[in-house]
Length: 197
Image (cartoon, rainbow, N blue to C red):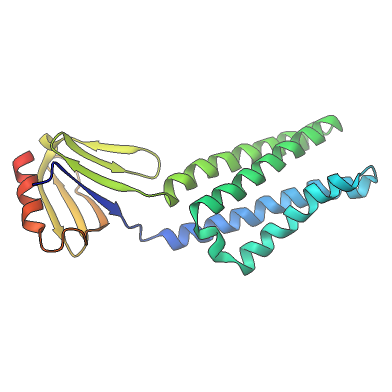
């Protein structure tokens, strides 16, 4: 009998969250485009500044619209989010040098927002699991890892790809999980849970 079980959590709202993430890419690229246009309008631009700022600001919305699947990969999404945060920080410093303090603060706050999105999306779009061991149960959540001791669990059920922990106090915890690896050994898993309780 295994010493622990690990189930991958299947998030049902993942497509909705990815759509929201792509919308945030478009919003942040508009800030980047406004920052790039400052160089063009002031006329004090070098060719490398123009190539560094304006094409990424135009490319990101085009990729979001025409290559949506590209952002479904957590690594690609993370890369573009880091790129956006870097450009927004550069924009904040640029406007601070021009004595536009209000715009500089706005760009800095949007940069902080982009970094928070980066952290949150890495949690949401990354691999999340429920680990069941003799020591207790750990479940990855969007913001933190939830630890549940066996003393607070009344019973465990696994049915129709849903893992449910019925707790003695409070509401039950339930996750939609990938349980294909059990393949008919559900009884052994439930016996393991009973032994741990």
